[in-house]
Length: 256
Ligand SMILES: [Fe+2]
Figure (tube, rainbow, N blue to C red):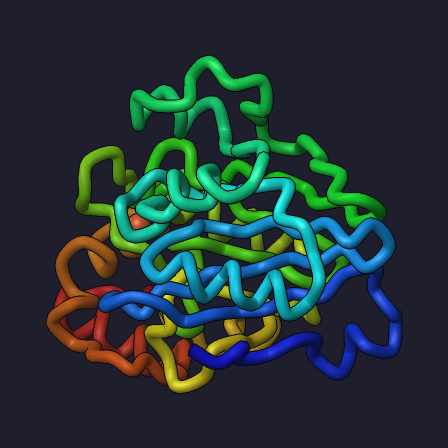
């Protein structure tokens, strides 16, 4: 698989201490990210899964040492390569305590996190955001001008809330927090390649992601749980606020 992208132009100007490399792997269009810290030569794999050999090959080509594994959540398609990475590298596994408890694994490791914690990857600080909704302990990783969002926020989409541990009201609050707390120019790097483009900005998502068009949590829940999957298909593209208001009026008698 090809290394899909390195740094967006805007970040290049600020010369961040890191690069993010994305690999699209497996049958579910998962993005596995390798965060490379330039100063230390260390690297972190986010959500190691599927063809781990591709990740290893990338790390080797870059001349970096994988020292950390960052999990956005515990679903099989995001974690099925952990053992293989741990077999090859002496890496620390990081995840939120809430997710370890939900999952039933890794509850005794010393690197369980709470929202707001900062992981230091060499000279790259990575802030852990607790973003429940898809699972109780879902995490996003915020570093420099990027957010690695797992199955919380996709380009023009968001994670399902109907699986075990899903909570659409929590997802509504999580998305609201992301769009208010992170700068609009933040580059969104999702956990799956479900859209027409692999990356976006929060600004573009606020403008055109249907899940960010809701002011009322109950209507968000209705759309997420009952309407979205009937009306949209991959690859996801932009949806205007007017289009969502129209759909909600037609189907429920009220706007978003
Ligand atoms: Fe998931």
